[in-house]
Length: 354
Image 1 (cartoon, rainbow, N blue to C red):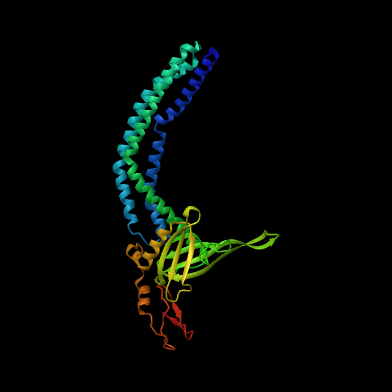
Image 2 (image 1 turned 90 degrees about the vertical axis):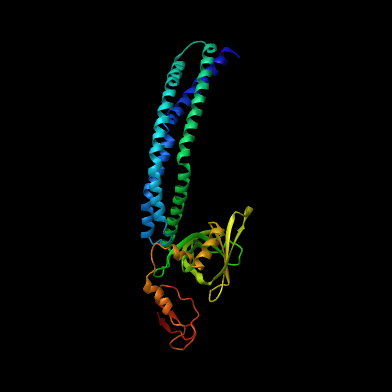
């Protein structure tokens, strides 16, 4: 190795040491872990406010959410002091180990001796820096181990709350109104594949599920004018295309289609007076999850998880609804949903007040 090449190598080692030192100074302070712990504390402290907001916007289910928030807050109060003490302890110890390395790197960078004499010093310092980096990583892993499992549970609930917030935003933008005491369960971007196979002209929008209805609302820009196959004008189409009482859901099948089966489809079959025998939708959530949601909605399982009670007087209206039309005595077969004020006789057209 020539003297010039050796000198370049030493300078490269020094630059590498200085770069490693910059990272070490931040890592020794445990900056990343401090930020993670602060974020976790913010998540825990703010969870009850997020849940209250969900209730204010009408999310009626999962009455155990409030209890989970309380449990997280209590558990964090037990964990946090030890985690923070460990961070301070490790940071001090690592800082003490870093100080002499900082000094020696600074001294090495200012030396002008021969490269042959400086290179061993640089190599030794690089070895010490690597050892300290391993200590830092080991300390960080040890500290994370104190709260990783807890953090995983918190983040799972946080993610679920985010999904519920997004769902309520979709319901808030919908063109239809919920019935009295009707409560939202989930909403997802969807394409209604009219013949079971997705085509470019199939309506795109939002699939909504409540404790009483399954609804599809078209919500998309469509071309209104084309010149030589180029779209020159568009309009927003935002309207309810169909709704079906969940009581009429006969069966739901989850399927995977598309490239490598990455697209989720749900095939919902209906009975009774539903407007369709079945519908197939491409949805942007797990089709298995939706299959379960539909099954639970039909079985009225969500009622047992309510945090917002159903008005007894409104529920009683359904129980007291007539089985025959008072005008023509025709049998009333349509599904009467809680919150309806009236129904129309399918035989004579009489409006029957409930």
